[in-house]
Length: 142
Image (tube, rainbow, N blue to C red; front, side, top):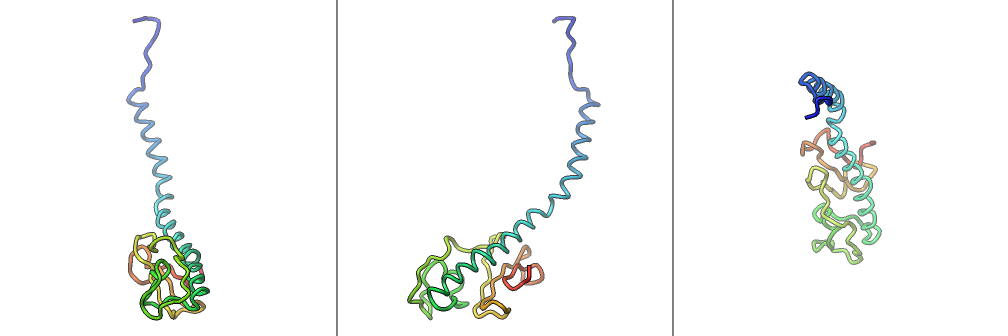
């Protein structure tokens, strides 16, 4: 061992100081990120409802002449319905996979709808899975 060279290592105090700094940074950053994943899911549901599924329903309506019935549901966008009224001009599929919301639950679809200005009602039950105030719908102004 060469006497002229000294070994350097972190002391316990230095390590503790680094841990305190990391903890303080985490305490500032984590609260800002909490809830962002839920916000992203709501945004994704809104995009599905007002974009992808709405477009698929409009294309179905252009081809068939009407929207799928409540009983036929959104499955009519994937496979040709066999329940009446059976569409003659079905040219689907209009979507690529079974439509599930970001919480992995089926979207709720009703035709005819009861919320103008749309002819149909389309919604996700939101994070709690129950119909109520945190639903994402095609008739809200957001």
